[in-house]
Image 1 (cartoon, rainbow, N blue to C red):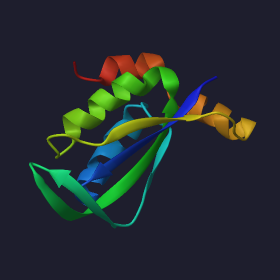
Image 2 (cartoon, rainbow, N blue to C red):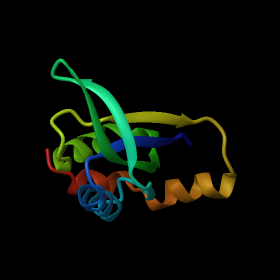
Image 3 (cartoon, rainbow, N blue to C red):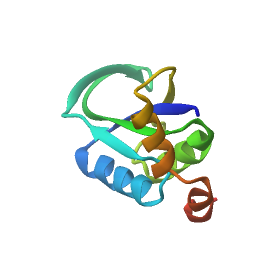
Image 4 (cartoon, rainbow, N blue to C red):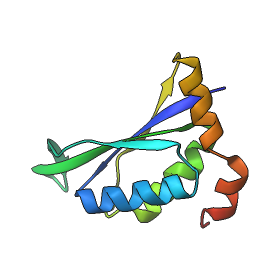
Length: 114
């Protein structure tokens, strides 16, 4: 049983909530944590940028990462969204099993657009 945290940033809470709701509904993720706005500083198009962003941490099965990544990117407002997988090496067994139970490969395959 391999689970992941999928870390992603969004330009605003509305887009974050839209993506989170779609991902949970499609059972690509068991749940997601939406953090209050953060300040990001980064290079973009040759210049240093500053922006307020919202961080989301999704919980899912490792085997669903590519489908989850594709769905996030499809629904995301950014041209180049930050979407990275962070393996969960160890965890509370009931919680780890809950992630598995609340995500389904069959449902996810049927609901994600290609």
